[in-house]
Length: 153
Image (cartoon, rainbow, N blue to C red; front, side, top):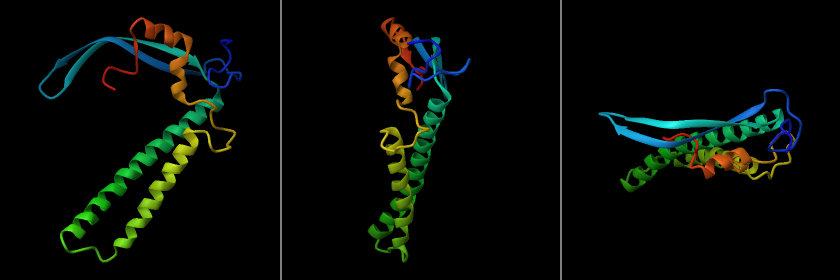
């Protein structure tokens, strides 16, 4: 792989287009009264990424978060409606719960289509952002005991 080629699609990149992939090791957790203090060694790898893959990864991230938010917002009225039925006093317009469910399922379908590359959109990245874990520099650090992400997430 040429350093000026995108790791995700092998297309050309501009000068500073990179995905910063964070890694850590030797995490030490110190419990405090209401939180946890964490010390760790941190490193990162700059993985070359073109503008198309940057945009495609952003689309995948946004659809995932909108779907999760929609699922949370849909879950609350569903639980309340189920409670009203169990309590013996059902909602008069309980059929309206269908609309949030349709909205949530539509976002689920969109997110899965983007993530599994089932949509023929040219601006989506051919490989997901998690493909960065297979980069040679990341693999070399992983062999030395480094872990992807941060020590708390």
